[in-house]
Image 1 (tube, rainbow, N blue to C red):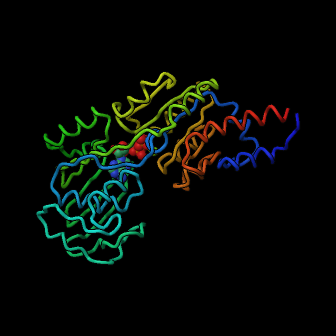
Image 2 (cartoon, protein in one colour; image 1 turned 180 degrees about the vertical axis):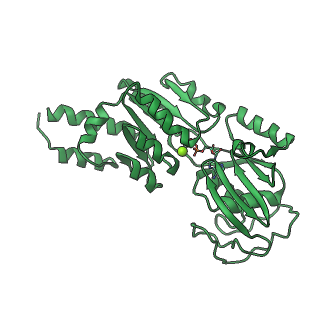
Image 3 (cartoon, rainbow, N blue to C red; image 1 turned 135 degrees about the horizontal axis):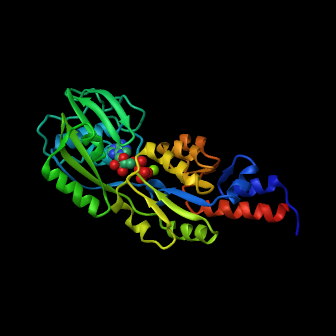
Length: 322
Ligand code: ADP
Ligand code: MG
C-alpha cells in the first residue's frame, strides 16, 4: 500500500470538516473505550421550540426579555416565542397583558450581547437590573421584581414555591419527555414554558457505528429521565446519566475515567469543563468557541456523523503508518 504522511491524514480530517489539533490525537482516538454524548444539541438538534406555556402574559414577556441575554438554545426559543420583535421584527401581538407593555420602543439598543432586534431593555416600565446567567437558567430584577426563569430546581433550591397548577404542568411535561422551564416572580413560580427539540436524524446510526467499533456509549444530560427515554431504549446505548447538573458532568467524566479511556462530545459552552476533563474532547458545531477551545478535536460542521468519521480516520492513520 502507498504510505501517506501524517500531514495527509490531518488534511483528510480537515477535508471532512474535522479539525485535529495534532497528530497524537489519532492515537488517542484509537485508545478510546467509552464515548460520552451530551444530549441537548449533540444527540438532538438543539433547535428548541416552545410547545406550550401557561401563566400571566406579562410574566412570559419578562421571561423573553431576560432570555434575550442568554446564549442557551432554550433562551432563543423563549425569546422568539414571547418577544414580538425577536425574529423578523414583525409585531404579532394578540396577547393580553396586565401591564402597558405593548408599545415597544422602535430601534432601541438592547443592552446585551445580541445585536438583532431593536427592543430596548430600558423602555418605560421595563428596567432590567442585576441580570445573571446561571447554569440552569437566568435571573434578573425587572421593574423591581426578582424573576427567575429556568429548571424547577433553580427556583426550589432557593426556597421558592411552585403554584400547584404549574407543578402539575411541570410533571406532565416531564412525563412526555419535554423540558419544563418555570418562570417565577418574587418567590413564586407562576408560569411554565414547555420546550423541546428532536433527536438528530443520524443519531442512532452514529451510535451504532461507534458501538460496532467496540466503544461503550454513554449519554449525559441535565434533563430529567423521561427526556432520555428514546436514547435509553436504544440497544446500543449502554448507559444514560440524566438529571446531571452542569458541574456534575465533570464528576461523571472522572468516574468513567476510572474504568477506561473516555471521550466526551458536546456542543455548548456548558460542556467545556466536561470536554476538558475527558481523555479526549470533541466539540460539535461552530457555535461555541468555548467548547472548541476545550476540545482536542473540533467538528466544525453541525454534523454528528463526523464523530464516526474521526474514528475511521484515526483507524486509517494507524494502518497506513505502520
Ligand atoms: P444538556 O445537559 O441536555 O445539554 P444543559 O446543561 O444545557 O442541558 O441545561 C440543563 C437544563 O438547565 C435545561 O434542561 C434547562 O432546564 C435548564 N436551563 C439551562 N439554561 C437555561 C436557560 N437559559 N433558560 C431556561 N432554562 C435553562
Ligand atoms: Mg448541551
